[in-house]
Image 1 (cartoon, rainbow, N blue to C red):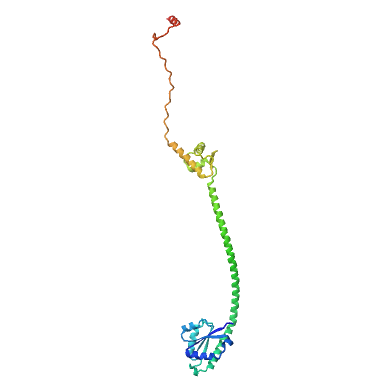
Image 2 (image 1 turned 180 degrees about the horizontal axis):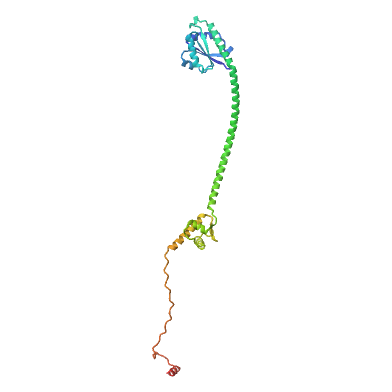
Length: 298
């Protein structure tokens, strides 16, 4: 059982002597399980507050006259909330130990302790009810504390699972983004007319053989396929670059000046035979038959 801490507040030093003398005939520790830890001689409220704070029971011992009563009331109102319980004790008039009946003071002190105890017993049912409520609240608190601990553990597990799922989600999302980007780069077969008009809407579409020739000359065979009016490449950008190259080549070709046509060459004329003057034959050999012919012609 805990010892009850009792402190006594008196008006002056002479009252300390009187109260101390009265306490010598009381076995408070064995009979009441209490101890008088301090006798405080002061009328100063601040000093009284400092000395009495935390006591289980504070006895304000003042004279039985009006001045003592007013002082007790003032101290009671100031110190009531700083201690467990406050009780008033009336001291007989006179502060001289030789003229004070110590037995009377002892009797008043015992009555004060009894009154304090009876008042405490009056509060006991309320205290027991409050204690019961406290125990109920403590039981609810312990239950809630256990539930909180379980929820905290479950929260930690869920948090860990959440982090794992989030990491998996980020991985899958990045993978899907990469696949989406790859699929966007993959092109489908396009009609040559549509592909050309999407880039050069005002220009006539070149013949398919021109585009096929460009694929061959640019070394894109196998990467770009042209045929049946369609063009295809795995990357759409490659088709666009090819058509832009064809457009540039055709534009340059149209702007280059055409070379002049060479004049038509006339077929060579056969050389005219050179006629000798009649009757003049140099170093001619005259045969008899020739002479005979000439004569007949005459």
